[in-house]
Length: 191
Length: 429
Image 1 (tube, each protein chain N blue to C red):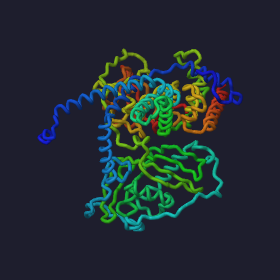
Image 2 (cartoon, helix red, strand yellow):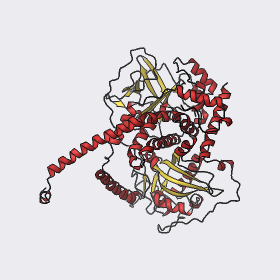
Image 3 (tube, helix red, strand yellow):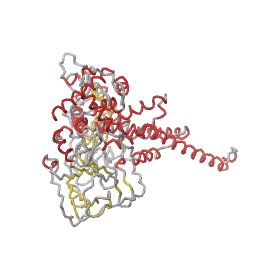
Image 4 (cartoon, each protein chain N blue to C red):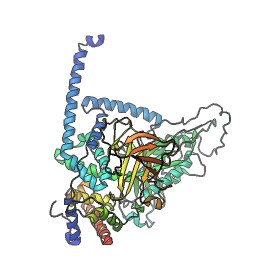
């Protein structure tokens, strides 16, 4: 303390100023985080739901929000915020999926069987909801589902899909084509 | 939804395109759950702040951690110190068997083995998988398992295993820098005899069409409890009391014949959580859960769970996960995963998962060792954990919880058997 006084500082004032600064920072951070959630939270979650399904989307969305917050300093162009977040969503979805060694290829239910369950389900779906499409989408590999989600849910052009995935446009096209081909095959099998 | 994309509609199925657009337009955007935002906020708030001053403090703190970590562990993701690598160089304890180890490895730590260069053999006709960008099946897992089998033998100083079959020269040098167990084994200081259990082979970006093909994996594994650490010089031994989680980022390169580890280092940032010591669990807010009246049927939509001390549990915090209507959100199966002991953070790569299987689908497929029982009786040692979602209450029997848990709804008791393997989350993939 005596050293501090000799240097002409006033510890209490400094401490007080620090606390005020900290409070302001905390409020500012709170507001910035709220802004992030308000601007993009719903879109992040919707894209995550489309790629990994509703059960896992919460975990992915949470990870994306944390990651985006921690790395927000890396974002050079605020106008690119949505695209930057979409990249994080897709990467987290892929990581999430690859991280769980599931026995995904042994699921016994066919689309037709699932369709029977569905018809017996009491809940009603919104007009336009296509149960066969819903099931077939869920059967896609996650990489293909990501392409479909970016194109049809996030409403991106193929060029933007390619940019989001960091792959050439041709690769994005071929992935989408493969996904649609697989969907067609699954839907045909269910008829 | 926009009316057109820029792909070639003529080459695709216009009907399918239209169905997809109509479907996605009909599906309402799911609301962002409040608990997801709350959990994200809590995770952020546990971290240091964002000001320059605090960032500098953080950098300084991290630097210190890095220095300490590098000194102690040479970069391996091995947050748990575990048993000492060099056992106490005193006389072997009474009753211990002095091991007879083959002195085939170079005794000097200053002369690590060198491996010959293995250039890519362009004469070899590669399989069709090398025409794809990434593996379509479990090849990455197989590569990791093969690697761990060899690593286990090297840890144990098995003279029959040549490290150059597993590592390139660069890979071995980087592995010796990153993996203290391997370094100690190859420098004839300490051997580790025990099972290495693969927990995850997590793929990073790679392209199999590259030549030579390189697959970048984060390999997460456990040195199983009971591993014997032997000081080579004295023969003194110690035994690990619990699983030790390790992880390395490894670039595997294919020379046309064999996959070798070509670069070994710490697990990549994206997957560090899988290899790290679990973070402490933060407490949720008090619960004001409304309990269903007696006789209410099983309600798979009651997702909110509260702990025995009346606090909200976060599935996103990995204390539990609860998935219902599996598969595809339309089936009849429910799965509850919990940590051990209850309330501890779940190991993200090793779950204890219990299954409600009213139609016997899981049991019929051999995924459960016992059938689900929807009209069970509580065993004498069962106790109410206090965990509830308002519809079902979780009871545990110490004598049975490795095999089953009990879910109670009023006077209905269900016995959910444990899944043979973890199922993770519901998936139609």
